[in-house]
Every structure is written in structure tokens, then in C-alpha cells.
Length: 336
Image (cartoon, rainbow, N blue to C red):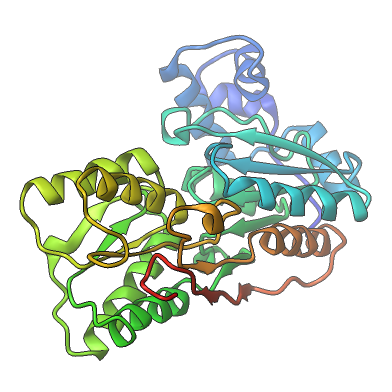
């Protein structure tokens, strides 16, 4: 990691932004609210001058915080528990403390910096939890960064993720080849979520390889949320859309799908096959037990810490770690 030697001072930033040094300090530390317009001017000056607070520069040079930071868009649902378990265990084994912050809708608070160069030796960044501009700034000043479930090829930031496309393709192949399904719904995850994008590509590739048309009418919103998925499937049924299977972007969405189909007296799996992704702990206990793709979520957390610690210690990290997924066959697809 390069040694940080900031050439600009806080006075330079204040002059550039047309504010006092005290105001710049307030924006950096978040101690006292300032107007959005003022914060934007100060932030623009900081980025233009590549300013790094002296305390932050000393921390980057000496690694004196002995702390890893984790940024998430939220901490909810069954997905995050194993990932957090893996991160916490790996950080502890490596001798680091862990700070966690959930950045709900980070685009609405672009100047909030609860974690960064001022209080961590490096950051683990989960998809959609940090604005691109802030990611670029942190990378530019040399703070070690590792991305989880999002790519950082343009910035040369190490990425840890799972084999989404092949996992999705395997499960759709199974629905087509073993159960003869032809009208397969795909429930997308959140917008811009790379896991969902790659799972959709696997879904489309499977259909095309079997000579089936990719029908836009069969795409729906799931957003990795059981309530949204339930509403989507209910709407499809009410509109008379014909489908014989639902591939859900994740297991949470699959729970909503099963609920909606049950309410409409559509028998799973006799009339409709249902499949998910992740293999969350609840999946085997649903009725019927959920066919899904097992993603090594805890291992993602462990591997992310491993790569970040390498960077902090001045070692080379792997640019991409793609962990394998596994097809888990249960009853919801039609297998006994």
C-alpha cells in the first residue's frame, strides 16, 4: 500500500470551498450539521485537492487502528447472519476488531462517512452500500478495500462473490430437463444488484440453450423480499399469466411465492415448481422443502477478510475470488 503524504491542507480546502476551516472540520467529522449545499462544496474541494486529514494519513501509514470496517446496505433477513459470522470470526483470528455500519440508501447521504480512513485500516464493502464517488476517493488515497458481491474491475479492487450464473443455469436446466417446465418466471433481485444480474443471465442462457424463448412477460420483481415476491405472483395469477415454474432470485422471495401460490390454491410442485437461491437455514423446513442453490455465504465473509488483511499487510490480494455454488434438490421442484 502506498504511503500517504497529503500535499493539501485543511486551509487549502477551506479557501477552495469558500468556507471557514471550522466548517471543513465539521463536514469531515460530522460533528455539527451543515447545509447540503455547503457540504457539497467542501466535499468537491476535498476531492479536487485529494485532501486527506492528517490523522487519517497517519492512520493509513501506521495501521494503528487495528480495526476493519464493514459497510452494508442493511442488516436484515437470513442472508446476512452467516456472512457476518464468517467476517467476525476471520477478523478475530487475524487480530482485528470490527466496526459495522448499515448505509441505508447511501445515495441520499453521500457525505456521511461513518467508516473510512479515519477509523479503520481497511474496508469491506457489500454491494450497493457505498456511492461510486466515495469508493473512488478511498481507492485514490490508498485505503485497502475489498468488495463483496460487486465487481471492481475498473478500479482494480479485489472482489469476492459466488458463481451466480452457473448456479442459476443449473437450476433452470433441472426445471426444464427433469420436470418439463416451459413457462418459467424469474423474480429479479434489487435493481443494480450484481448477484441478480448474473442469475438472470444464467436463467436466460438455460432457456436459450433449450430452444425456449426469453419472454419479457415472465420477469417480475422479487427484490430478495418475500412480501414483494408475494404481491408479484398474486398479480401474475390475477392477470391470468400462464406459468408452470418460478425461479426466485433468492430464498426470501421463494417464501413469498409459496405463500401466494398457496392462497390461490395452486399446488406446489404438481402445478407449479418453485426454486430459490442461497439455501438459507429455513429452506429445508418450508412446505414443500425448497429446491435451491447453495451459496457459501459464510465463506464469502471469511475470504473477504483474508484478502483485506493481505492488502493491509502490504501483500498482493487476488483480484477476483469466485466461490462455487451447489444445486440442492428438495421437493418444491417436483423431486421426491
